[in-house]
Image 1 (tube, rainbow, N blue to C red):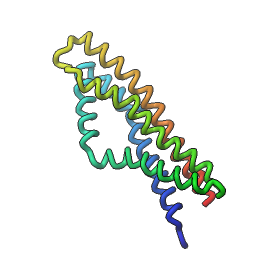
Image 2: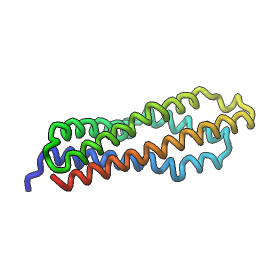
Image 3: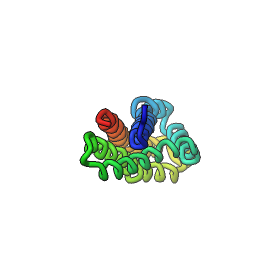
Image 4: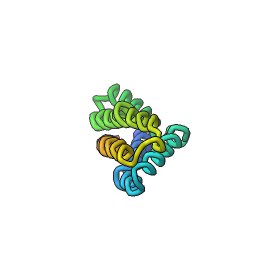
Length: 164
């Protein structure tokens, strides 16, 4: 069996985009609610720790931003091969894959940066609750969007693969 480099790119891009979507999915389905159960001061402290760990984890950064890079590469290949069957699916999947990273950078990262500037020890419980609830609702809503976007991207890549 002879597998082309394009097919390998499609497979790897789809898997990595699905993995990135899965990482986001766990936050949407239970991590954020679990943090919320700890109370606002503890939730802020824990989320700041999670964000710091994510920002310094080569494994996380490789998968998360590697998904966007692979999606972009696949988008270029698909655009150059629009005459081939399935290329529109691949191009659409690539757009969704890149869009997940754009959403992250435009919405989730600024919210994380804001939370990083919050000193939970210096807040009253009421102020911490307001800060946490504002972060929790907005961050989680955008996380739902980027999770769905990444899953759709991976699915479209797999549909496009069917034609190769």
